[in-house]
Length: 433
Image 1 (cartoon, rainbow, N blue to C red):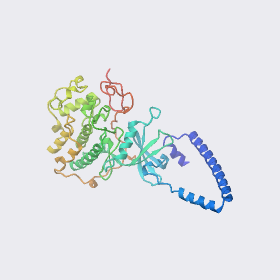
Image 2: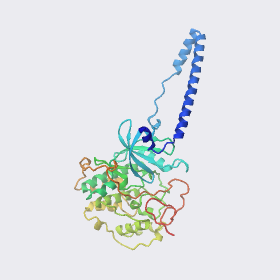
Image 3: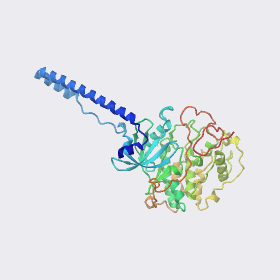
Image 4: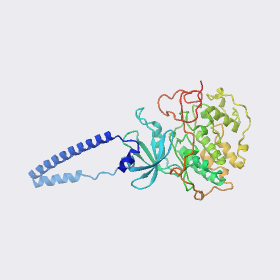
């Protein structure tokens, strides 16, 4: 009875379908046994009527033709069933998946299972899910969440990614902290994040949803980049890609202004927002809508001009906004405890012009990380109760845009933007009449 209860919690296997499968299996087994018995009878008859010479010749033929079956290639083995895992508790739900904490019944290890949100009746397996699985399987890095395997339910819309369970997400952890991380701890976290982002970009993968709630932190001081639901592989030249990406608070200005082409620089803007959030223990640009987000960016960094951002006035939505002119940046007044080198790194991450924005490789060798205090050893980080284990309620964090990425019908230049008002997302939206 307990097994049935656990099984039902994984979403729903239909009893009628299981009964049909069992009857079908019994019928196939019965048919196979009859066929095997018939073949054995024929072989016995043939053997009894054949001569010793014929038997020796037949034995030699069998020895030459029977070869041991080759071992299956590791990545081609059959997926395990989700019933191999015991569901422990629900962790969180995002735009592209639901995450559970579970226990592997074979190894007794605690893992995280992400159930992908699939709708096979609407065009088959979503390209976003394929991209996520592909990215996580090919990128292996100490600071990127490790994917163990893919498991299946009884239906094609029950696909689970099995990952290492990590105790905390950075967003929820910071909201429970009385004071921000130490400068030495921030340097360690930033070095780990930049190292992971550099590897992604080197492998031609752009994440497109970097934020503190997608950064996991274990009790050994190690950051793990997670949630590749919006990630995709790109080429050179980049070409047109979906504009409705990146959670609003971490979205680069070129995306907000409708740029039809963008680069890995949008990830670096998100890294800059994360850096600022680590410093002040709160989101630096918590906009309520795309218009409000742009207004907050202009007030923090000053109004963009053609001199500092060539091509700015040619962006699709630049002519539709009239920001209050502010000629200077207020970064120094907002981050008073940051050293000059640290302010320089933050400024280069939050640079208007994507072509001038610092890359992950360049940021790793920035003087900020070599000045005092030195980065903290990860093993010396403090530990906290695990929210993923259900010890505490998880904090609110905005969601990524829920758009039909890579699917037909998204060619409208204004769809999903501040001037389209047609595509809704689970993030903050503004609809204009």
